[in-house]
Each structure stands twice: as structure tokens, then as C-alpha cells.
Length: 74
Image (cartoon, rainbow, N blue to C red):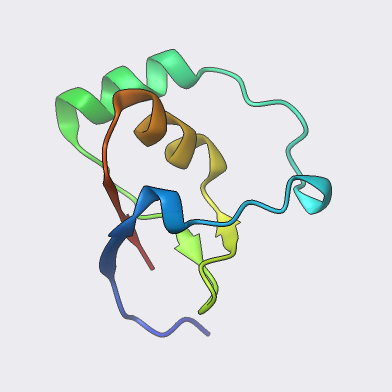
């Protein structure tokens, strides 16, 4: 069960454990970044309490590509 808490955190504070990620290849980042630029982030990324990424690596990467300082997390 999730906490139901949403907040904005610095993009730089998100920890990505690349070795244990399910997705090995990130594709479609340019298209996703353009969508986020136009419409905003519709679904926040999911992180553990220590800011370890649980879900949303493509969204996080798109935010980094766009130069955003913060990202919505659940």
C-alpha cells in the first residue's frame, strides 16, 4: 500500500539503482519529454523514503533532459 503522500523533490536527490532496474534500455525519452513539456507530469514517479526510485525512470530522465530542478513524487 502506498502512503498517499505526494511532494516535489529535487531531481538530483533521486537515486537510481541501475543494476537492479527492470528496464534495461530507456527509449522514447525525447517524445516523453515533449509531452511533459506540453502537458506537465500526469503521473508522479514513485520513490522509497530514502528517495530510491521505485517506478518512473523514463519520466525522471525526461525531467533531467528538460532541465527541471524538481519532480513530483509519490
